[in-house]
Image 1: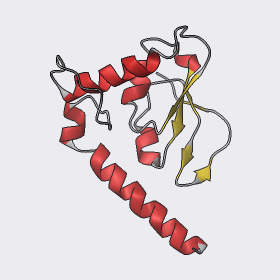
Image 2 (image 1 turned 45 degrees about the horizontal axis):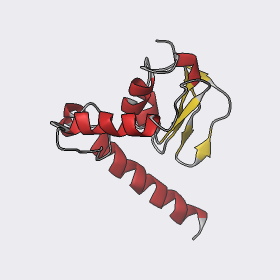
Image 3 (image 1 turned 90 degrees about the vertical axis):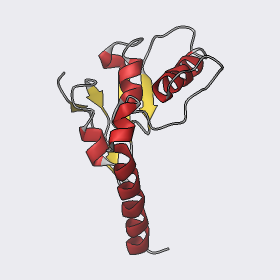
Length: 128
C-alpha cells in the first residue's frame, strides 16, 4: 500500500468515526462510543457504558498515577476518569480525529495529540 492509499484509508476511517460521534444518538448516551457492560439492572446505554468503566477501573484498586485514555473520542471516558483522577493525571489523546480531540476542550488539562496517523509532539494545554 503506497502512502496515498494509506492516507485515503485513514481519512475514510476518520470520517466514518466523526459521523458516528457527532450525532444526537451519541449525545443521548453521554457521548460514549462503546457497547458498555449490560447486566440485569442496566437501564440505559449510558448506564451500560458507565458500568463498563466501573468494571475496567476495578482492575486498578489504587487510583493514583497517570492514566491514558486511548481512543478518547469526544471525551466521555475522560470525563468519567475525572471522577477518580485529578485532571493533571488524566492524559487523553491517542485518537484518529482532530475534531474529536478538540471536543475535549474543557475536559482535561493534559492532552497528548495524535491524529490521522501524524504525531504532534509535546503536551497541549487546554484550560478548563
